[in-house]
Image (spheres, rainbow, N blue to C red):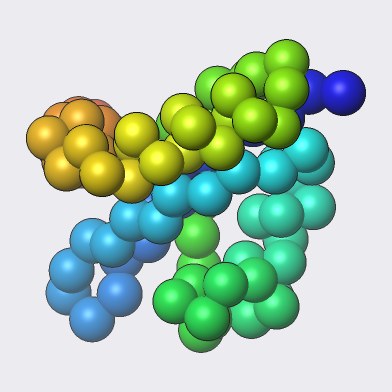
Length: 89
């Protein structure tokens, strides 16, 4: 079974927010976040997947999730690249 580490992004109250998680079904997980049944932080916001990466095991995915959560520079780079791309469209 594959596991995914994902980075979600939303624009709420004039600010961009990100959320990092892991799952084995990214479509279902995004649907849960967008229907306010996901993590408490994600409730009431419309999320979209900004980044995802597949892993062979849950253990490796959880380690990668932790690294992405704690690596503010990488998250900010992904977020800023998204904002630049969104503004140029």
